[in-house]
Length: 296
Ligand code: SF4
Image 1 (cartoon, rainbow, N blue to C red):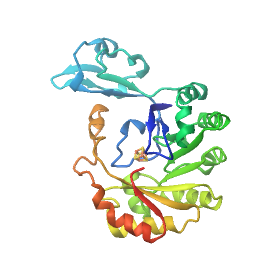
Image 2 (spheres, protein in one colour):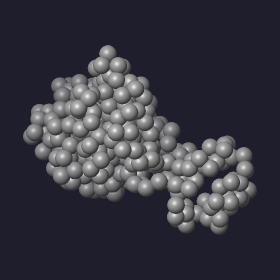
Image 3 (cartoon, helix red, strand yellow):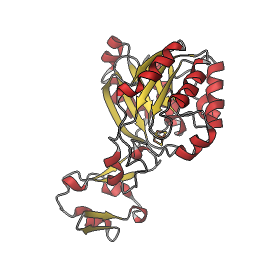
Image 4 (cartoon, helix red, strand yellow):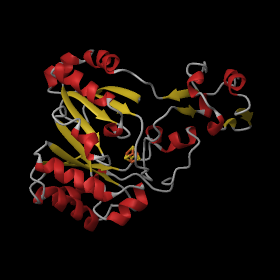
């Protein structure tokens, strides 16, 4: 299931790229800026700022959807078929996030920009959520891209089974690996995940000499200290398949989405990180022989 397709991106891999965002993630990072990507099923998003109170959704959603002084109150757990709400809201205040597209349907979208990929050395990046945690349809999609000689990158946490990675090997040109921390307990406390799984998969990919670029989300209160960053950079520099590292500064753009999904945002009190705050990390990474940059 996908939740977005973003064309003409220059931030998530080489050249001009189309980013396909898959819905569903095994982690729950406290700072996540794409909360709509976390669950594997459909999500209902409601933006009270553009709601015109037409009420069609209330008719359809009784008694789970009600008007209140602050706009709609949506009891999402009691809405069995979210698909029924797709396109029901004329003002687009209530939207259904997520769509099942076949590999062939996805490819049709991708092919529209084939010329741009060829001219810029770009291609397609699978993102999420966690694209490698999807069912086998991702493998078919990657196969279609390879048949069409389109460069493929995947943004991944590597928090998946080795089998989920293995079935995609030979179909992915570049792994953009999201490496968040080197301490097990901190990783678990902030993401609900198991760092051991990530490290084991990273080592295996390294042994297979897959092309890996490390991407570090720099998050206040989690890993935004020189000591913690040095740990991640040193680990990256020790891997023979890694010669490039990207620092992705924390931003607050996702905070409004939490409200729209009826979720609490655990990181609501943190400020965005400026690029200049990343200079010491950049310098240390260069000292370690890595090509380092800010952003994708
Ligand atoms: S890995 Fe990414 S999508 Fe998944 S919860 Fe963390 S930030 Fe969100």
